[in-house]
Image (cartoon, rainbow, N blue to C red; front, side, top):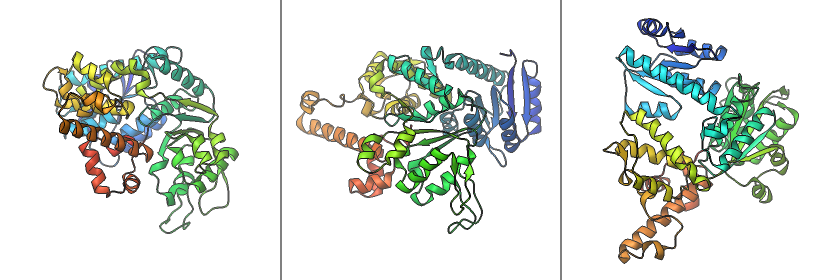
Length: 463
């Protein structure tokens, strides 16, 4: 490994590019791009250790650059620069994978320190993610040292070495997309694109067009021919998240694409050969879906070549302190807060919660706590009420007998409502419209209920 890190700086201001070239040139190999479009071209052809990009630029903005980096080389660390620094922008950038951000105008020494830390972080992750050592601290962005996660790392490393179809299972929020990315970026296809798609979020009438593309005039609104996601992923990996949500007609075409390694655009009869590795994921029991007639048996066996099940957080509670610490570090940097840890009582509250939303729910809880805490440590009162209330699953009398009747009744009702909403949203993958229809309530009413219980529909949309 070269001692000099490779840094790409992206900004539409020439003076800013010159500043970084002068500031970093003695210690790093610095490449500059005067706009996001140029940066995207460089990212497609070269690999960098750190990317420093402005947020607001004409054309492709900093978020487009960030997404391109994380699609092609997720271990590359991204530092966002902005003169419009707001907490929502910073948090959203870090949610999407940015390492840190710089608010203009910034001190050159501060910027140099941030780049140095980003490079050090990148190299730490490279060492931790190697298949033979991944079991120690994590693999491909996944965190944990439990026996269950060590087995997952072993399977992911094995899957990365084999160019076969993988089916990732596990509850919503267990990290299935991170696992898919780990497989891709440790595989021989790592230099090509990783293309993720949430099958449950695609409108039923457009699923086939999105996956396989369409010819000009194939349907109303098809003013031009369009390549599908299979073609976009050529040579790389197509990640089909929530594959169990695909309508049956699309399942037929997907099965054929996997079998023949070719696709047909909607409105065309000529097949197009594709070289794509498919990784699928679902929170459903596809075997049960086959028996119920909602999923094709032939497609099930076509996908079920190399299955990997990601454990629920409650099945690996020993990893919880590691995960909580990682999220605390992430959001302390995002919010520029000097928050260094958790009180023993807060850790006990985290350990006592059932985490029906798994790792994603834990991340949201820590994010909230970092934002609201008044001191250097997170306390129980900083955590969401759902985390600090009586453990879920206990008989109401055992958990609530020390309270007055009306208060106990209110708490039991709240607990039931939250558990019902979690189960409902998990079933429909975060689709509020379909969930509201099942529950028999108005869509707006369901939104209010979710907000009341600290739940967000997007938390149930994928891995």
